[in-house]
Amino acid sequence: MSVNSYLIPGETFSTENKLDNSQISLSDEEINEKYKKGEIRIVTEQARYPLDTIENMLDSKQGDRKKYLLNPEYQRRKRWDNTRKSRLIESFIMNVPIPPIFLYEVEYSIYEVMDGQQRLTAIYDFYKGTFELQGLEYWQALNGRKYQDLPEQVKRGIDRRYLSSMVLLEETAKSQEEAEYLKRIVFERLNSGGEKLTPQETRNALHNGKFNQLCMKLAQNDHFREMWKLPLESEVEDLLLQSEEQLRESTPSTRLTLYRKMEDVELVLRFFAYRHLDALRTPIDEFLDNYLKEANSWPDEVLNQLESIFIETIELVYTVFGDNAFLAPENKKEKESKIPRKTIYDPLMQVFSRNLANKDRIIQKAETIKKNKYSNKKGLDGGRRDRVLFDGKYNGRKEVQSRIDYFQNFLKESIS
Image (cartoon, helix red, strand yellow):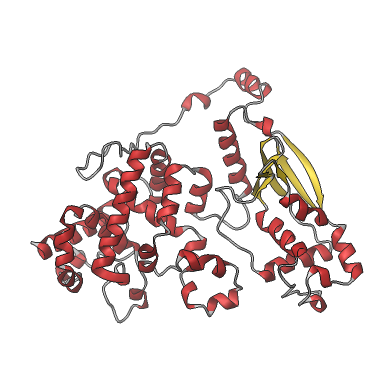
């Protein structure tokens, strides 16, 4: 249990093993009884939707609530551009088999889309006429046409195609907690193949909660995004819908990959988790997983205080260093010196957050601090041959602590 003086009351993180081992060594009779009771058994049904009914299906409501929820928390931040949407339609024209979508019945006749959001959205947009077909490989003669402009025979052919679905029924779970647990199991198994999820995408899906939502909210901070060379939140939606060619030519999108993989949210999570650096005894991804699971249970008053600490720290760092805060020491041989680094972000944020009481003095000395940030040449290598302190190859607890010590000593000297 961490007891650092800069932690706030209630901000506790335990690394004790909380696994229940009672289920590991069951007898055959106990296993059979567990199976007969239907423990952890998914109840499903299959359905097929004609493509020309999907527009009305997604618009349908039960009372004032949509019946199909397209944006549950475990969905990824990917967006299909019009070329990818068009090629799905081309697959239907050619009768290429399409994988089923997966729905979860959260309550009677209300469904979350667990897997298949992009396919449903592409079909919906196609029938709405919001995009023209483009980038088709085998039906190039149809490029530039919307659904309404297609030859009659082609429209009929598309209309008679189906999208299959697997529906996890409401009676699968006996409680809200069990429902969340089973959804996570299914989501994890669905995403065990194909395009691999990043660690933060997995966390977002399997360990979503109040703290995870806070990290997502804080990742939208404009100064945070500027220092990480990320597109501002107001630019993201348009960028996600651009084609790969457009993205390569778009200056604000050079760091969009970070956003797509939810690494911006992971950066916020790292800030909070490294407040408990003394508890880091596992690989960093496992450390962040365990921290997020525990932090999701903290009370609102703790989360509110941590939110204030993050915002105040970001604003102070930005005030002193501007948008180059997390760049490494200049090195003519390294183009990477112009790219923000976690090895700068992690320790710098920790040190500034621990010195918020000295905020006025830090701002007063901002020019000196900015000028002399890397002036302590001896401190940059810590006496270790060929192991530069801010080299991304070294990210163990001792290395992170060495970087924190460097910035703490540097800041102390600068404002004394």
